[in-house]
Image 1 (cartoon, rainbow, N blue to C red):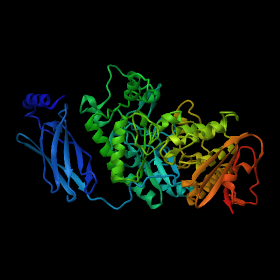
Image 2: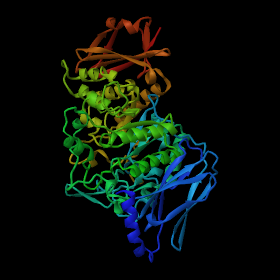
Image 3: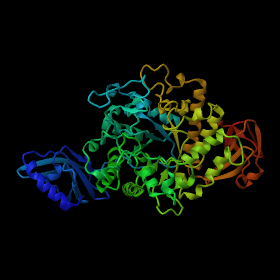
Image 4: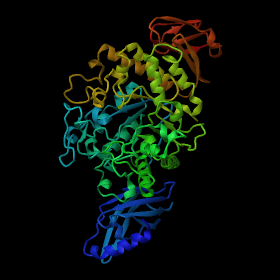
Length: 622
């Protein structure tokens, strides 16, 4: 709708509105800061008749450049510029219509010195947790009668269980002890959604992927202040914080879905259209436009409306919110949900805006594909795609699949550990493969231990690869104490509560005394390898050289000026002797080694004894 037609409609409506008082009930962003590199900000102003007001701003250094109105008269979008010399304080937004004058306070804040946008890198080890299922630090916030979902019931796998930010914060020492250096939480923003009927079962939005208010952390997690406390305490303990962002969709109870600013705010179809979940049409040069549109603009599920990021006001809203969260809470990195379903031009603009303000921030999206070429499309790459992504990293789904196949499949020409080798052999398509985030499972996949048949040797083998190969390793909560399960019958089975996170739990797996001997062995294995990785840059930024697997034996080296580490794996079911003559290129000058996993001395490198389903990590010495 063009501005001339809109002006005519407003002119016709004004007589009806004359007797009604306009209201301003919301301004987003809720605050901003002086001294930002981008001096422009666009305020979304909402309220009854907010779009019919004539606005002005009276604050030194703040200028109202333009008032934008849309088809819904309850919205106005105010373009402001904030000069470098502007002073922090309360900015008065004044709206007038006839005899009515409204004044709305909006805060312009000074930037603080808290660390923010530090990024995560190959020097880090990320721990992924679902706040609702990790630990309940404050039972008083388990439920609120005024929310659409007022239930909390740990006996129901689909309801909220009461875990919160206070619970995560109280276990930061546990995470420090484990050796992780960064915490990624599934979304913490408000999900004031009712229970939804999914395949005949009523389910809560405990996972956090259905936002209903971008500027409020969910009260059941403790709200904005609890999140600030968590981030501050994490930073104090030397841990970085990864925030889970969702740009593709929101919950259908989101306040702006209840009062849409414009028809183009969402991807609308003549009748409900779901995404096909097929990623091929996005990169396929032969794809039909219909297939591309269904993939990108179809809804993820019926109760998560699909946002149209080509709407300029919505795009500004999402980008400014991303910046606001970094500045307000002090987060260090973003994991982007359903990355490949977003408008990629918008994603490039959003990434660029974040990186302009926070050059060190890391951004890695979820694009669940099964081949390296399609995965490379969503990050900085060396392929001649018509579209070039500027995303610094991505989640490495292809390597996850390859590591699992290496543990499950028999050794063959293209199977077993060959899958792992061949996947890494294609790293040349990425500008920087060390920025990819690697993993063995997550909240949407079967748990790692179950996938490998609860085989403890394979468990250690997989974690050895995860913590010694290239990339930024990420581990799903509970893997360190051998939590297991398949998504059977639903994903609730892989999202069970961490034992000991709730008062009255029979066992507290956060404590060594309550873990079984095998669980302690698993925990200590992760801690030993994570600790070594944290203190040895060669496993963080060292070059990777791998050798073709032979007969189920797979060898690679990490090396730099600080040292060389050799990782040798036997993926077969029988013990083997690895003769090392073919590795002379990397072994030259080294005569002995230290076994990183056992701290034992290795007197000779001529041959390495490898028990079945075992990896050794050797720090080479001269």
